[in-house]
Length: 347
Image (cartoon, rainbow, N blue to C red):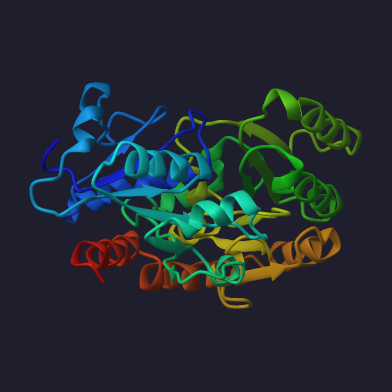
């Protein structure tokens, strides 16, 4: 415990975008020299975690640093950091990463004013901040998400019909724009029999009716075998490598890793202008970006790839280069390490 320099709290049991970031980044931070541990439920065994019996020792100083860093990514975690520092007098500095694409509530602004450093993940998120901050975009693990082998890119290995696949990833809900994707597929697939659409993600109980409505639309169009809800699969990574086009049609996002995961897997992207998608996707080079919620524009962009699979392949190669040059996970880790070092040095 005395060696731990950074705490990454995760106060949400269900898998979310924030949890995915913690799962991905904490092991990489450890590998590159930052002694960090996560704290909270819902984390897989490979992520270094604090035990409950270790918590009282947060009140002592770490061996090699003047204070620990408490790196929060949610309001509840900022509040817990404040309690640690202000009430329990723990020797901690507080960092908050904001990915919000909207004006912050008065409560969130109050919490942020008590942070020692603010990080934001995109230029759009930064536009909603009035406090000093540093932009640190999320990165992608290029070992876990990588280009396909010849066998993997062969769509026949999927067990689904057609010769090309197009995929949509994320929980099934209006926020994620699943309905926009389904509507686009219903319009386009009858003209492109070689393509099949696969939709990946969990349906929660409060969105069960939404998913059922989408399935009724698909059935009525006679496309039940070519627009397929795959649910949650044990390993999503091979599917990024199997499909030729990834569609990220969210109406709103915090950051959104889906386009990066696709680009690192050498797959072309059609994305909405939500989250950090416009920062991530080079328009007309690695994919297309359309207005969030604009179903007609989304359909037109997807149609470009369905009519020209060779263009999708060229954009996929460019996307892989972009992911490797600008969004390697190591770059994010190094940038965060610089934020921590400033706090430890008293800057």
